[in-house]
Length: 506
Image: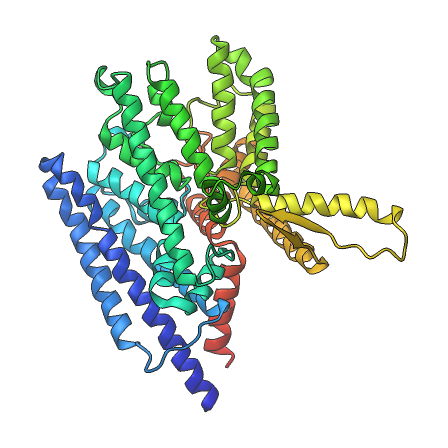
């Protein structure tokens, strides 16, 4: 009886926090209405945001107040995982409603677009975004901005203090910038908002300096600056143009736009703690970090190979060919998904490099997806340690470690075991998802590329798979892939298993 009472109180707390998250999301859903200042003729579309915002706020308020616990409970990481799972599921459903009302998308298409937004993937059901409502474009970018920051988790950490640790760890953000979770969340918010301000100013200055406003549809407007900043720092990749960043290729300001985008993608790729040390001027700690070394090594090698073996033969301007190789490599590794080219003429080697980069992914505790550079670096180091082991004296006491910013992290076998388990599960999911896509008649190269993009929350596409008329099982396979990739597998599996056990096996 006492156990059932404790279980009831725990789930009441979980539902209460989930309801509060819905209230926060409802306020975010009103942000796209700012687009009316520039396009008042779109006022009729505002109902598409008022209705879901009202519904989310209403249901959230009921859950928050009705299930509010009589006394505060300390939430475990598993409890936080359930809140994360429930929150992301519900906000994806509410966020799909504007697409259903304004763009007349089907339920599956709308959920796909919402999940792609919140998971900062960037795959889209929209064929022609340039004829899209400005409010919907801003909503897509806002979802990615919020999803990249771990909107619900960070807001909860900011207000709930110590119990926020459960939410942070459940979403894979185990490192803190300050001893207290609330203070750490505030620093992350400051960093994130700093990226946003920096990006908008940089884009605007580049477009202004090179007179980018001249040229009809090829101007880079303030609206473009806001949207691309939101999606670049979130490593999301949604764009206001069909050709993504490539829309401005060949224009006087295209190099400036690409440069700003590269910087923002790099910042979004960084572990927030690593970025914190960078901005504090701790360059030695920054460059000693294994993730940073892996990032620059992977980008250097892949961009050079892409240039010599792919783009130099299909792009006449060799400077542009090198820029293309560098830009695409950074976009794939950071999980952003912006592009300045089409992959139809790329060789198989180019496709393979992009798939590998998308699988590796960005920095741990960053806005990026994929396996994460920390895990790849750790497994690489473990191989080196294993090779060295037979050559050491049997009596030698070995303390293996890797550098994480300003301190050594000593690695035990259990760390390597957990990492290996995650990598195995990731590749198993990757292969299954790719097989599902190939089962619908697509080539293996394209299938591997597309699902690597979905699972790594990247957003790059082969161009002929992720389409509005694609089979529903294929689209839902990608939806599940995006969801699993954003919430790091074990959060989803453990949360579902715990809910099932507490509900049916108690």
